[in-house]
Length: 288
Image (tube, rainbow, N blue to C red; front, side, top):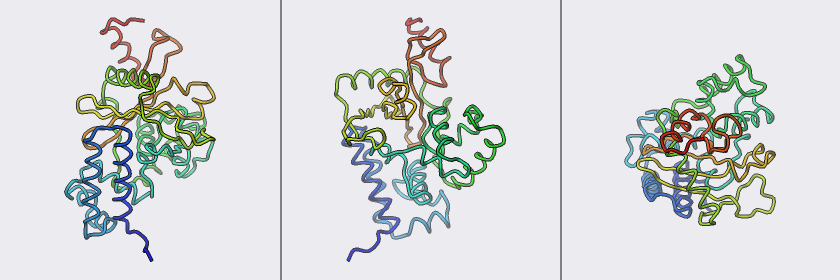
């Protein structure tokens, strides 16, 4: 009879599944091979990963062959939460509202308001938004509740976390708009791989196009927004969520929309980078 898989086996299997999905979705081979090398290293490791993390901290994970900062954070995420958000996204099963409800004091309504207002889907991205002062823009969250959420996130995320890349260290608006244009074009042409989203997909069809693309040192994943708000407003083929990764597998994200007001009305705009988008259009001669 097969016994219960060890934490090392579970993590190796999830890394291999992530690599397989990336390969099927035609992602950059660099990302595919990085996860496979890490899975092989973990599968052959004699030492128990939870014990290693407990006694040596993140440095002990990073010191392993084929395990850098980003994959060390993946290991910690799986060990501490039982989940790997990026894998769930690749599967089409990520439900951010449920992720946020793990934070004390956040029920279904507030979790949805956070997702719809801030366009984030991980605890790390939520923490970054909270420390940037954006959490107070969510209806129903004042300064005291925001402080409580920040404190809870700090405790939950623990010593090892996948540090989100702040916008100033991420790719510029021009690169993001270029990825957005490629995604919209290829989705329209029907040349992208499709995934089966769990949410708002009652017939279980392959319906959500996914793009993996590379620009220089940046790796991108783009999908149409599958949020409740996007469905309510009829924006499911307009709002595009772009995730970007550096060579350490650290992740950031932006949402690109068609602006409905102001000087950029009718233009594709990266939320949070509106001024940079305006400068981009002026430089390219594509003025509003």
